[in-house]
Image (cartoon, rainbow, N blue to C red; front, side, top):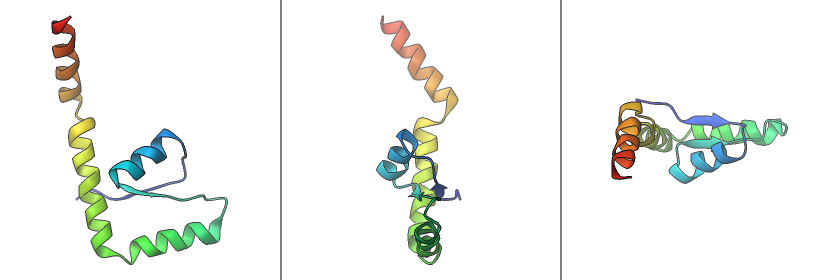
Length: 79
């Protein structure tokens, strides 16, 4: 299985993580809060598994280069 994402990158990447529930965002400039969030995630086996599955689904849907190219090609053909 995949692994949940623990990210300190804010912006669009954070939005994707939150929207697709593939991991958590932590502010590493706040070490106590960051460590609490990471610990809470690690202690929740069900959430870890679900985020892992969500990440795999995301990669299959949006990260498959062959599918991306095919969608792009199909779009160009329609023009």
